[in-house]
Image 1 (cartoon, rainbow, N blue to C red):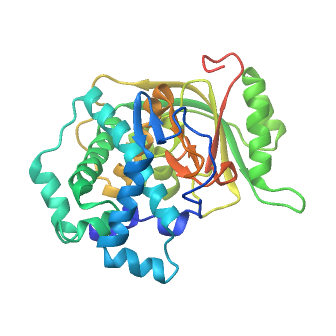
Image 2 (image 1 turned 60 degrees about the vertical axis):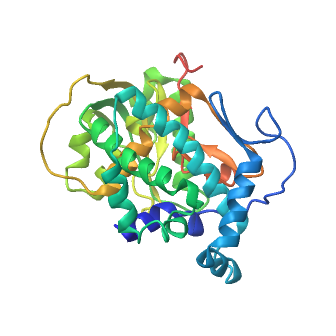
Length: 324
């Protein structure tokens, strides 16, 4: 569990790039905001104070800084991201009546070495470690809740293989844009692109329990969280850099009751990723604004990235959809 939390909490140490903390203006409507989620404002001062606290009080953080393994800008982005997600998690838990008890939070705290070690493990100041732990537990429960309820209807296909002068990512995005412009021709356009058509109705649990790592990753993707009428352009497995899925999400259904109440237990990390991705409808409805000094919001991964070139995928509203 400790390794899992470390990977999740401090993923920013290897996946993010530097964004100058004192970057130039712009961003959320209020210049003193690090981020705005719906009507909730995350102040720039509070983020800077948390960064300073970690730098002053956590030797592990200072050591990573000295060795060049961590920049304060990366730490800042992680803190803003954790606070943005906190707002979304609280709203999701409220909507679905999902709760966490003190024992669950304490168990997670102990798994990372207790309260004394939690700030360095989670990358947040001491006053926020229980909030962070609670959010982590809630994400797992949100993942389980949605796993049993969400079904998606989609049509599209895979684009694979880079070739001289043409990248699979570029071909996938181009196909996605054509389908978004002409959604009624999704099957035809997919065939014209040389891809086999996938026209499928599938539940999230079905994909998550096939035993295929790629299918499990799709269960934790925008394929099950984007709005109906969205063309999703994503990598099912980032380790297969030249394989992309382009799919028009025709229908997304959320059952009031779970499809099943049993079945194979899924890894905590997968449930966490499913829960995180299922925050997307709330983020889309409320709106997430990030100050440019920290980067931009990537709706496809529910995270903050340095700039739009680092987006993990593309969500394209189809012509005639309610999003246009």
